Length: 187
Image (tube, rainbow, N blue to C red; front, side, top):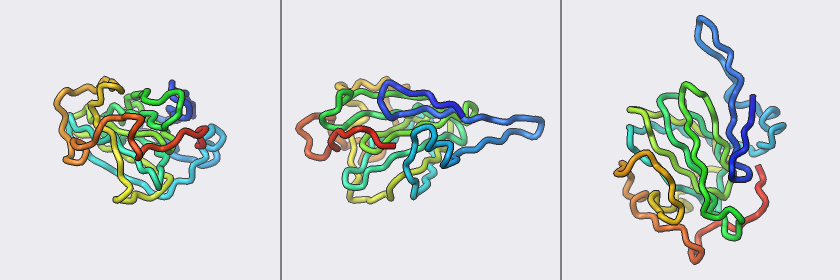
């Protein structure tokens, strides 16, 4: 596997080694020792699988009391996957990185705890599987509005399909009391 750092410290693109032949393909989608060698030492406790139609944006989400590192991959279709540094005091506060994840390119994105996360389905149907380092806690769900102009994410859609909760999130501002504090990234 090959790892590619991004502009946000700790956010890492993983390009697995894929073995293809006439039967199809094989690759290791997760191998704890190899990921640890690459600096990803999070212990994953929950796997999620979502399916979205084209033009859907899910996010930007995070948990405050139960922060989650995430390791994402697309098993059908394609998405623009986005991580946003929302850690108060971070030198990269408010900056984002977007990575195209597709079933064909088999790339993965690792997002450390303390970052906001969202994605936009860019294929007719996109299925995303992701590992989380902490359990989902409904009353700890927080978010930032997908269209926050101070972040300026270049989403591939102007009028996305959104959940009611994603539509209601506020912008990323330093006066919010529900943002994580900056600490060196632990993967």
